[in-house]
Length: 116
Image 1 (tube, helix red, strand yellow):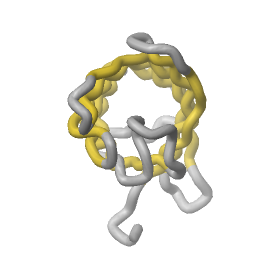
Image 2 (spheres, one colour; image 1 turned 180 degrees about the vertical axis):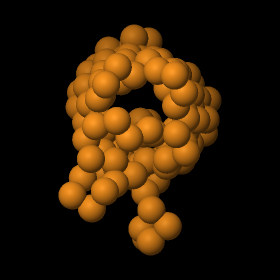
Image 3 (cartoon, one colour; image 1 turned 90 degrees about the vertical axis):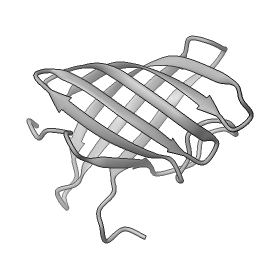
Image 4 (spheres, helix red, strand yellow; image 1 turned 180 degrees about the horizontal axis):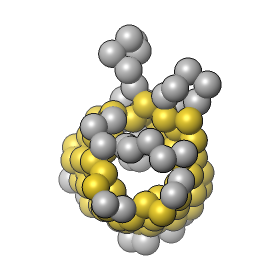
């Protein structure tokens, strides 16, 4: 897949543990010349940023976020870009906290203007 993430808004398909991103979190992606970055907020996240690189369908980035309880956290994520049958984009993610214990997987999908 070579479709750019630039200008896309994505959201998790399921809630993670409390204090992490959830279905109310929105990621606004940007992409240029192999660089990928995004701002995100919503749910338990007041403000978050991610920055990294893209090689083909693989993203490698680090993220940092401020939560509603005033704490911050950071981590590393490897994602695979997948095009869904309806043309939207999905990221299948393997992430690991670097500022605390914990790791897991998540899925975020492109939100369209017709989404609830």
